[in-house]
Structure formats: structure tokens, C-alpha cells
Length: 145
Image: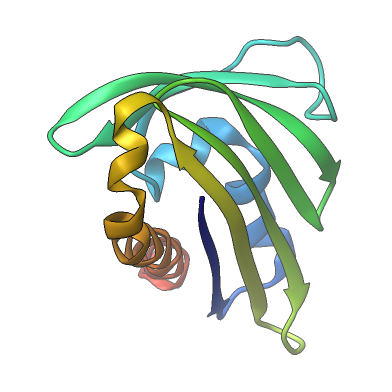
């Protein structure tokens, strides 16, 4: 299993940051994913399911996940239900000061099948990739409007 923990401070209030965490349809703006859609009706909640495509090397691969914890304006946790890996992760937001938000992402993932042999070599790549996504969210939210 590959574990990671990343953190970024974004110079925007939680009310502007959390929608990008809590709404999977906005994830493609800052993650290497596309075609994200919530497949359960209603508000985001524990048990909500999401389908989309994730970039894996040079191709896009279908994957799905289920929300395992959700607190509006505070946190989102998930676990994959299909795709190239078993992944459990979470994002939490907290006020860093009156106008900034600290975003913390953490998780564990394991590749499936023969690709498990690659895990010892991929930890750094996963951690760098997760950190790059949070930096992209920071740049998106702090950039010119």
C-alpha cells in the first residue's frame, strides 16, 4: 500500500474552497480526472457514488468511488468501488486564519493484479501527484477572477 498526506494553504475562505472539494463535478478543474458525475440523486452524503475517468500515465481509465464520510464545509472521504486500484482517501478543510483555508489530503492506495509489484516504486510519484493537484487548486482559487 502507498500512503500519502499532503497539505496546502489557500488564501481564500472555506466557503470558496470547500465547493471544489465537496462537489466531484468540479474535480476536473484541479485533478487529473474528467467526465466526473455523481450517480446517486440528491445532496452529497455518505453513500453517494461517483463515476468518471482518471489519468493513468498516458490514458484515461474509468473508475468509481463511494463517499464514506461527508461533512459540508469540513470534509469528504471516499473509497474506490471500481478502477485500477483500491484507494481510500479524504480531504479536510480548516480555517488557517480569517481569510485562508488549510486543505489536508490523505489516503492509502494499492494497485491491483500484477501491478502491485510496482507499488514500492510509485510512492513518490503518487505523493508528488497529489501535492501537485492541491497546488493546482491553490493556483485556480488564488488566480485572477
